View: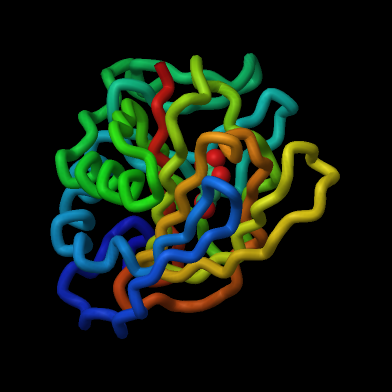
Length: 221
Ligand SMILES: O=C(O)CCC(=O)C(=O)O
């Protein structure tokens, strides 16, 4: 299987119980919430990736991220030696990022509502691709103009251990295991909590193969 090819016809995965777990005052994990959306979500993802394929970006400190990125929506989050920022154009092509598919928007808004955030209007969806060993260090999402809107983070494919910390990097983090179809939503008083992902363990997901895909929806502007 080519790394970015999704097997749309693989058997449906075992259904998880749908339930809402609270992990902070205004933070929730919506277990299995994305599963019923997959038949529309995955072809839409293929369309986005055909225009804006995954690529590894460099941090301002000169490190190549282990996670490969793409984006859709009006604003795409990027990083290079000159800093972190949102851009309207894909720096690889100079063309606008692909539009956010309607199904992405609907899912993000439905998940936000389920977590108590009505009226979420994301204008950016960062798409993260983790292969085994890839990780994301603890960080705060602070490149957005306002922190009024929540963050909606969808997990697909291989399992991950999500770290949900406090307001200082040194605060102890909760370890939240995430499975295919889970969505984490945090906002309000929790909007600036540190978060990250431990290195992905080796494995094979029946639908997505040797990778984890994450969609992070935000309101950038
Ligand atoms: O992959 C994840 O679950 C988290 C991604 C993330 O924290 C980010 O893109 O800022």
